[in-house]
Length: 73
Image (cartoon, rainbow, N blue to C red; front, side, top):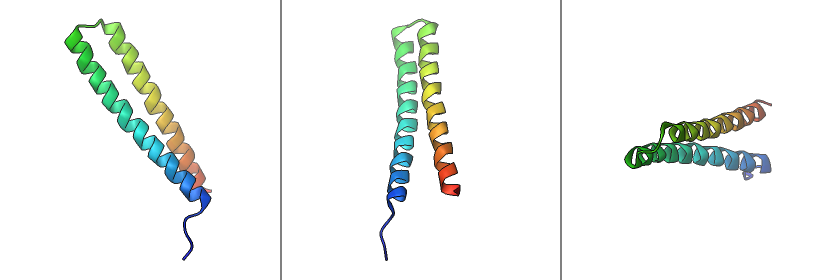
């Protein structure tokens, strides 16, 4: 039985990267919100953190879409 192909290995690496980015973005966003509340930071810093989290999630969504498109081809 042959092993996985090179494209399967690359797809697996991409999927793992997306999973790590999603998990890290969520953890950092939640931690930043908590820390900002504890330190009494202004709301503009919370919005900046929100925008960074949204950017991470949009990137993950775009890469997931690319993976899905390649798997259908």
